[in-house]
Length: 155
Length: 206
Image 1 (tube, rainbow over the protein chains, first blue to last red):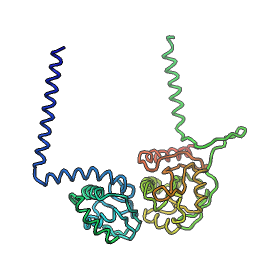
Image 2: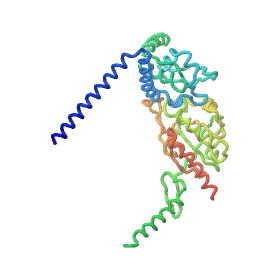
Image 3: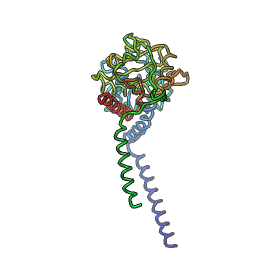
Image 4: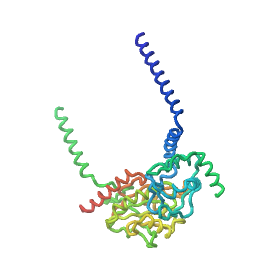
C-alpha cells in the first residue's frame, strides 16, 4: 500500500513538472515577434466574432456569408465591405436604411441597428473580414474605437 | 413455452407489415365522427390578396397540394432563414403544377401588395407558384391559429414587433394539414421535401 502511495506521489510530481513545463512554453510564446501575437489575436477575435455573427448577422446574410438572393447582400467577396471597413463598422452598429450597391447589384432592404459593443464590432468584423475567402486581417478594438467616434459624429 | 420465440417472430412480422402499409402521412388536428363519417380538420374558407393584386382563395389551390407559412418582409430574426429554406421548396416544385407555396404576411400594414411584389421579385420567384398574400391583420392571425394551428400576433417586445411560429405546413388537396415542419431547420425541410413526394404518391395511387 505504501508503495502504491509512493507511486502516486511520483506520478503527481510528474504531473506538476509537466504543468510547469507548459507554463514555461506559454511564456515563451509571449516573447515571440509581434506578428505571431497578432495571429493569435486574430484567431481569438474570429472565434468570438463567429458567435456575434450567429447572433446578429447570419439570419439575413446566411451562414455562408452569401446573403439571400437580391434581398440581402453578400459579405463573402463583398467590395462594399472590404473597400471601407470603417463604414462597415458604422453600419453594423447603426443599421443601413439607404440603398447600397454591392458587387454591381443594388440592395434596398433595410438593415436594423444592433445593440453591440466596440469590441464585438471588432470581433465580428475580423470574423467577416477573414472568412469565406475574405482577407482583411485583424481589425482591433482600438481601430473600431476611432472609427466609431467618426461614425457617431455623422449619425 | 418452446414456441415463444416463434410467436414473437410472427408478431414482429405482423408489425413490420403494418408499418409498411402506414407510409401515408398523418392527418393533423381534431377529428370528429358523425355516424360512420370521419370529419378531419381542414383549412377554412379564406380570401386574401397576392403580390399581383389577385384574389387568392382555397379555389386557387384546387387540385393542388401546397406549403404554407407566416412571415413579414421587415423581420430581422427567423424569416430570412425561413425564406432561404422555402427557396429550397420552390426549387423542387417550380415545374410541378400539382404543388404551390402560400406565404402570409403578419404585418399587412407595412407589407402592402407593392412591398410583397418587390420582395417576391427580389427572391426571384414566379408569382403563380409562390403566392405572397396580405389582408386584414386579425383575419390573418385567426386564419393562422384556427386553420393552420400556428401562432402569429403582434408583440411590441419581440424583435421586429411580431411574434410568430417558423412552421411550414403541408396541406393536401382536401385542405387537410398533413405535415408540420420547422422552417428554420434545414433537416426538417429535408423531411418536408420528402413528404411532398409521399403526399403526391397518395394521389397517384388513387
